[in-house]
Length: 139
Length: 113
Image 1 (cartoon, chains in turn cyan, purple):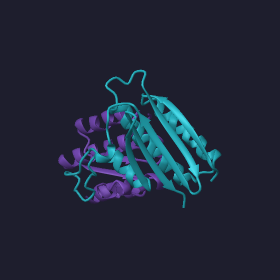
Image 2 (cartoon, chains in turn purple, blue; image 1 turned 90 degrees about the vertical axis):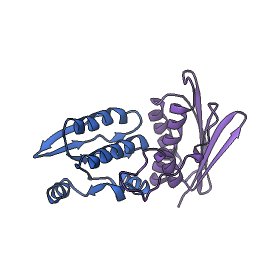
Image 3 (spheres, chains in turn orange, cyan; image 1 turned 135 degrees about the vertical axis):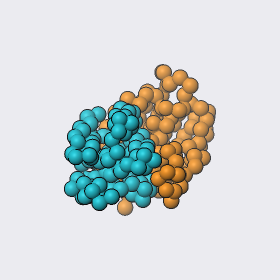
Image 4 (cartoon, helix red, strand yellow; image 1 turned 30 degrees about the horizontal axis):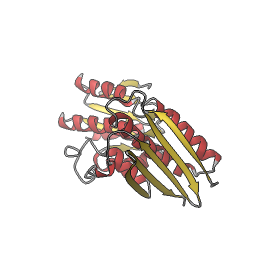
């Protein structure tokens, strides 16, 4: 894996997520990020950005989400920043994976995926922004 | 998103596209839950072409599985790519949903039930 970083600015619109995924794939290929890692990071970013776009703003028109991805050593770090409503997705309850089908909750799937796919997940509120940072070690 | 539907006996086989995400999930949900409302009780999802699914798509599978269980129906998924199966395991769906390797295995499960 080569060292590098990219910052991607997208409009707060679900249609932008496909473009984000394409840019993340391109970055990953250029920096020799293993395909399994790239798949996991893409899915985690999809979940995080989707949450912001769908629920982060009263009115998402004209609003933006800032995504940064960096590779260094044997670790990939990605962050999602938005200036929408204060919200820490890590407070969302983890679904009970032992529950039977009838009892299984519909919610919480996305953030559970993010936690499972990444090695480290961190939320910070800074300068009136939500900043969610994830890290994935390359094995 | 392209959804292919074909009826084999009393089993409705739904073949989905390569991408099931936030943009395509609502249309898929309407179609899948709609066919159960119309009376389908044995539904097989052929995930052969599926390469990428996020939580919006996973939620549709969960809703359909719950609905069919309540109605005494059966819901089976088959031909999951390794990357998709990994996601299913991560989210605990392999414990609550029936997953078959192939369409033929799925058809046998429907008959055996």
